[in-house]
Image (cartoon, rainbow, N blue to C red; front, side, top):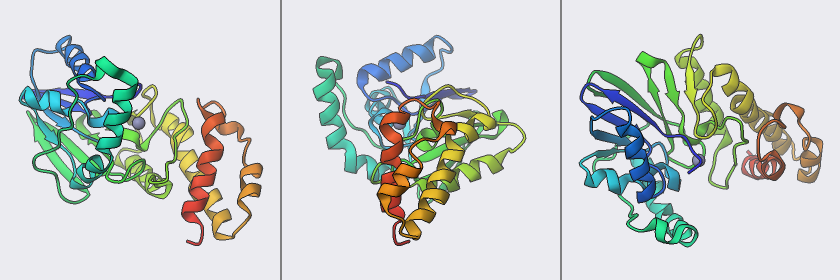
Length: 260
Ligand SMILES: [Zn+2]
């Protein structure tokens, strides 16, 4: 597991944000929580449908937790479940034993929701950035955003055919507006940080993809030239996996925004 998860200890139990990619992972998460509190995990919020966001659900559900996710998230989870399970089983073998998909029983409609447990208010907002139906969690009291795969720190985001950099940029701007002066950001991947780090590692990269690549696509500049002109961008070269993802990201964004 290379992604971030988070949990919040409330007066009425623990809220876990994302459940890991396997039953073994879920057990490991539970012991990490045990080191902090004896309170049970009451809620598991899924911010996405990529394996590492939700395939530990079954474990926590059996232990009495309620799974919480938007209907759009559940729909994408169902769409990708078979291929993610099959791939992880191949890689993990025995260590994948007991892992089963489990979904929210009462998926949340719409694009935002306010929830409260033990006095802690959590705002859930759809981002639809990395996978359709992805969401982020905002905790007003702590001024903390748990972004799911909308934000990547220290490593470069990967744009898939089903990702939307335009939605990512819109979600990033909504996040910034929540508390422009002070905010802690727990990204989907990488070390948590502040808004300045979020801008540096994610926000500006979305702007580059949407504004620069998007404009080139709209003006029908040849894709090969667009890639060549922007292959070396010193402001993003500190991001891990730059070499393997940056050109792919330009290419996929271009094809997505072409003719729009
Ligand atoms: Zn991820």
